[in-house]
Image (tube, rainbow, N blue to C red; front, side, top):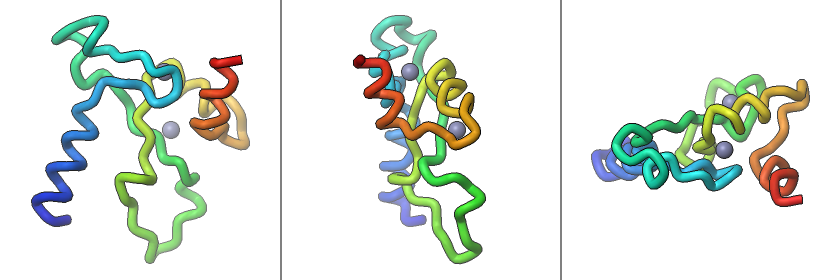
Length: 88
Ligand SMILES: [Zn+2]
Ligand SMILES: [Zn+2]
């Protein structure tokens, strides 16, 4: 990974905004909430082949609640599906 790509990656990881419920932990909790986010793989790891490379687009940043929800179903719910569910 190039230095620039790595910087972008780390910047995204430093975000505290949940992609599903859009709760911003940094905005709400200040410094305490900084970086309080989890990585969720959009593609189930089982579908990866040895040649697949994980890119930043394969990762979704979600809060612990949404992450648990995404994994509650055996057929892992997609982030977009959870977003719709929250909005409905
Ligand atoms: Zn969330
Ligand atoms: Zn996950």
